[in-house]
Image 1 (cartoon, rainbow, N blue to C red):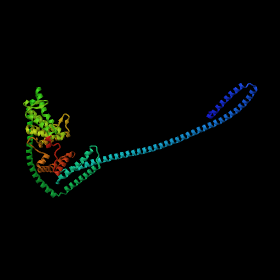
Image 2 (image 1 turned 90 degrees about the vertical axis):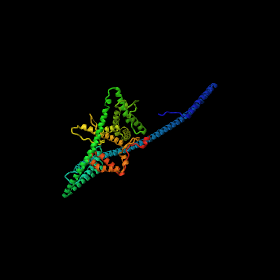
Image 3 (image 1 turned 45 degrees about the vertical axis):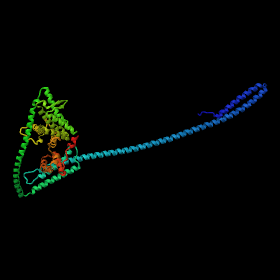
Image 4 (image 1 turned 135 degrees about the vertical axis):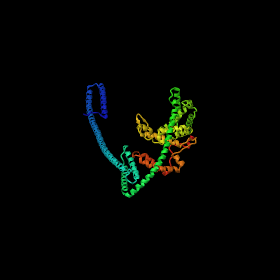
Length: 543
């Protein structure tokens, strides 16, 4: 039910009516007091009653009017509330529809995005599957190529055996054999890559198949050459070969005599140096095996004084090398040098000079074995100091050669033959290998040490102490010194000795032979040999 409320105007009218009634009551009261007669009272009462009735009718009319107005106001308010409610409801319906529309749009966008994502995922999965299939196919193709490569290598090696020179044919197979070895070497380079976990490429297989075709062609040509030789020509060639062999035998015998004479002289020189080094070692046996503390301390200080300067040699500056050389020269000359904060001299013991000379030469060789083997450019500063010491103190130079020949017999040059009854480990020790309880050192370590000592020796024989007067040359220095004669020597090496080296080298060790061949070809083509890395220039000695 609705609550009835009076409008402000109705309330004002009701208030006036109440006030009017109070005034009339006051007037009536006054009149009643003034009038004492009953008639008057009756008349007044009648008038008052009539007026009251009029007034009540007027009040009733006003009240009825106000009530109707109040009803209209309430109806108006209810209408307005219904309109506002309907407006709010319409607005809420619109917002609900808009919200539902936005949600549907978001859902549609979400479905679209999901569709795109699913499409991309399917494409990525398909791409992954395609890549996996391609990788599988690549692996399968690689394995097929590897099997084909192994088959080709096996066939080429078998065919190469047919190219070996045979005494039963009158045909010279040297050229075929050389080309066969070259083809085997080319194929070995490809196979070596597969040993590192790689598959041969299509280009590698093309090269391998080309090598196989060429090897087959070589076999056919060889067989044709052998089959087409007439019997008469064969007999003539055999007769010519017998005469040639007889002449060659005579020449070989003569050359063998000369070679034996030269080799005997080299070995005699080698033995003399070893005997001299052994006598030197015996000469300071008393100092080396000293028991008293003072002599032991002197030996240790002499050893430090001879080895530490050699360890300090570097290519930092020429003045530093001069200081190191002067210190070594003073020590070998019997003068005092400062070592470990105190003065030391070889004259402090009768065997001091022999001991220092022996240890100094040994240290020079050890630097070549270790430092030069790891850092090739270190050969030149060490060699120039060794050359200067050798010039002023020849005994040290002889001991240097003795130590070098003992650790690296290829510097003699000499390849010691294996004698009957010699244990394998002892023979390997003679060849220069390190042999201990754990066994024989690896080939890589052995070659590294040998190359270090040979590099040092080559640097020594081509350098001179800048303040001395002697000099020998090799390599780039030989080229500058002898020019035309040097290139004749290189041509001789390429045409006469290199084919022999190539013929006796196994297919797995052709890498160094190929590098030597490239070096010879490049050098002959350019008529130049680059100076070795680390060579000391004239500017160095001013630093």
